[in-house]
Image (cartoon, rainbow, N blue to C red; front, side, top):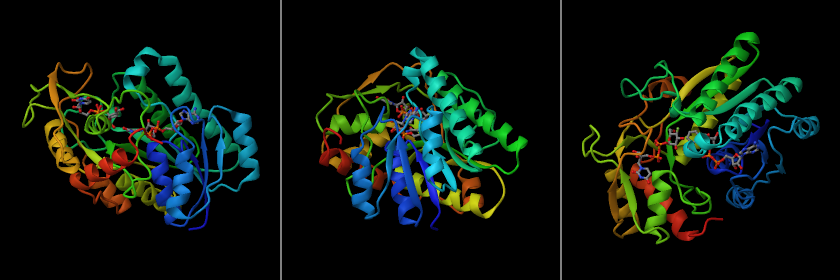
Length: 337
Ligand code: NAD
Ligand code: UFG
């Protein structure tokens, strides 16, 4: 495939890994990011891994004129829209910032794509739109809800995309609901590089393992799960990245919009994740049991059936590969990029 794709949020965690898979599948990529939560070094590393060049532009997706100028110069066939802010706790304190970035940013991008005649989009949504699921594994037709501004921003954009594809069936939109991405590219050159103290489990464990943080606080050990700790569906970021290639292939093959989960279908507890990481790094990860984190749910994992049927995609990597790759990245890059 030699079409050109616009990738927003391309220097971020999932965007950078997805660029590798897109380039290796033969697509051309034009990368944009405002660098609010990432380093431009990711672009150098994508080029190093793939041997392909990636034109990069520092552009905010809310900047309509900069986007228009760029798309006037490039012949784009589709866009993958990763750009956005993703911290649940920050969103509670800065709701307007989150709605502006995530909702207005998406609307601006959609307007410019529309003006330029681009009608194919892949959107990064989240399992957070399922709220506290009534049953697991979670199927795509489960009821939707959100408990914080970040989650609502994803839900609003999903609704906007539904309305858009209803109004103009020429739009082909893939809404991908990610479960919990973890791991890194197997080279150790690309990985997650959170600013400040990580919010999420895997990067937190990794920073304890490398000696930057003293211990992991386990948020609750009295949930109704096998060992009392929270259950999540951790998916290797390279499997997730590959899911985007499959989604794009489907968009180019069939004139339809769709929504799918990208998860493994398997739930892992916090203590199981810690044990796997200890194996990978060969040292003990000290833990302290702490109160439940407000807003956390007990159990969340995907039904992966629809993605398998519709996209012929499934996650292939194991938890051990995920933590091995995460550890390789963290130990080779203890201070990130
Ligand atoms: P990330 O922060 O590493 O990447 C997002 C990128 O978008 C960053 O490089 C940031 O600088 C950029 N960005 C933010 N606002 C922008 C703007 N207005 N204009 C241009 N660039 C902007 O996060 P990620 O983990 O790679 O997440 C990518 C997408 O996937 C996000 O939309 C996120 O909400 C979604 N998602 C992430 C997770 C997760 O756990 N990582 C789970 C579900 C969904
Ligand atoms: N946890 C700890 N200690 C920590 C961090 C997390 O015990 O320091 C526990 C949590 O309580 C939870 C599990 O580890 O049981 C996973 O927590 P994460 O913060 O890594 O992930 P969440 O499932 O809570 O949320 C993440 C993103 C959301 C996104 C969701 C689904 O932060 O934005 O995955 O994709 F919506």
